[in-house]
Length: 252
Image 1: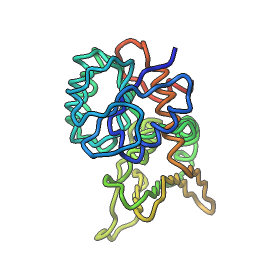
Image 2: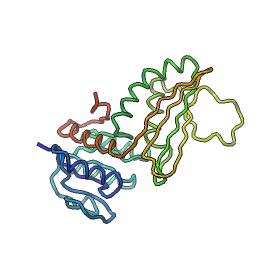
Image 3: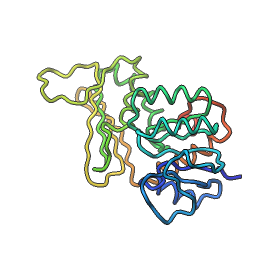
Image 4: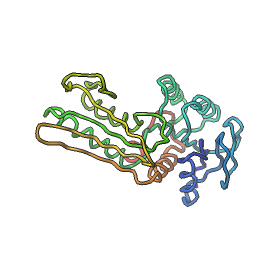
């Protein structure tokens, strides 16, 4: 039996990708969409406000904007619906609200839905302590399309958090070195953001040591990798008990 999905942000770039992929997936169905922006060509009803939607569903996939997060979570709690939360740029207060909601419903939150990126995180947990102990400096460079509003990307921060957790939260994050005139401290992760063109998403994790450099890269050539991940997450989350989940749970 296919998973029935409410797609929040259905007319956005990622929303359209998810819609297209779901049409070809026999185990997933978009039963309703939510978007303030007008659109056309969809095979499901679309509501401007999520509160207007009374169509039965199994899961919500959210690819929208941070401003609507509280309303989304209130709706999910009211209808006891699991949420695949893909929106990035949430405030600390919103993240706390999501964690509180996860006490009553299942929430899968991920800055990046790609199987490749989440596998990369597993690798980073193993190699970061080894290279850090050997004196390697750590830098992350992320590149995205000109329309992306938040910087650095949620994925870059997730990669940094992954590394930092493996190093006992010992490193601070530096986003801008302009105006500084000093030797690079060893206890930091530099995070740089590039915006331009239509780049779907590139991430380079650079471990720079004495006379050698190790670079681990992930390149997204299409937004479909994020859409496929979101649909896989929705299938995984259907019927799950309340709690916080991640893509690591999906690919484990």
